Figure 1: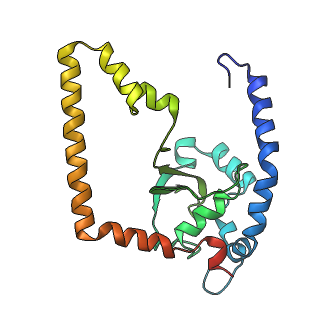
Figure 2: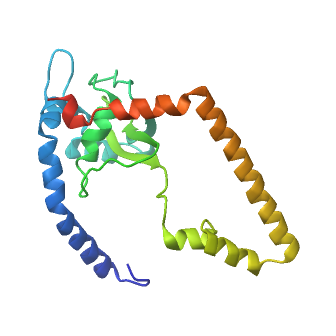
Length: 214
């Protein structure tokens, strides 16, 4: 998006992006068909995930009749593999996060690296309804503009070093050298403990959502 774009241009750009991604999003939703049915079903063991969706009219009445700071009380809930929504649905928090991720206009795709997921929930709602979701993820390995600006590639690092005074450049180089030594020591210790092997083995056997509910 170009700098200084008007609100109309931004809206039009977003609309085009949604249209470009709509086909892959629909294909992705179809592959999650059994998972969606599983999440929305009411059984003796679990309540439908739809019980965590706020009714718009009820929310509007709640806000109109009370102080907004009391009517809506958001909080973060960390999502882990084994944790469940014990308050209401008894679904796994991870499955709840995945379900609401499917409501986005962009297709749901797995990302490499470590991810920390959160649900945003409303303590003012009887079921602590889900207000939103987000995740913190490893950054992309290579983004040219970013890497050159920060100095994460050779060209960017050399350019920034040449722009500094000699003593400042020397200090930056020593910091880089020390950081590399520390990371190398941590890597060697991780390999020695077998943690890396266990992590790789865990990720290798982890099933995708559509495989779990076949």
